[in-house]
Length: 133
Image (cartoon, rainbow, N blue to C red; front, side, top):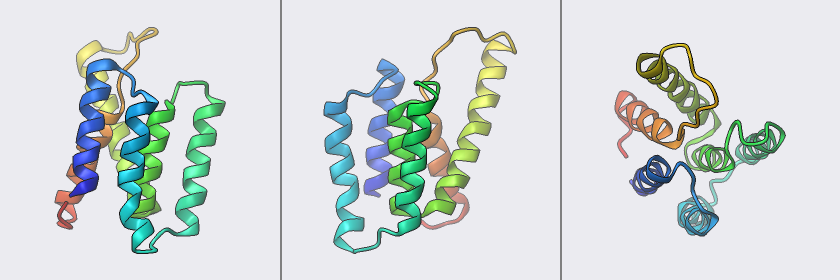
C-alpha cells in the first residue's frame, strides 16, 4: 500500500511538471526502502537490476529518465526483479498505445512523463495477480 501511494504521488508530480526534483525523490526513496531494509528482504538480483537501470539511464542521456530508473529500481527492491520487468513491459505497452492514439506516428522531440504509465501498470499487475496493494 505504501509503494502504491508513493508511486501515485510521483506519478502526479511527473505528470504535472514532467520532472521530479531530487528533493522530492530522495525522501520518497528513503520512505519506500524502509520496509525492505527493516525486513531484510533486499536481494542481490534487485541491487544488480537497480545498477543496470541507473547505468542505462546515464548512458542514454535522459531518453530514459533517472527518476524513471530509480522508481523501477525501487519496484525491483520491494516487489522483485521479475515483477519489475513485467511492470516495465506493461508500462511500455500502455505508453506506446497512448502516444500512438493521441499523436499518431509523428512524434518529434516530445517529452512524456513515464512514471504515470509505470503507476498504471503497477496497479494493473497488482489487480491481475490479486496480491493487493
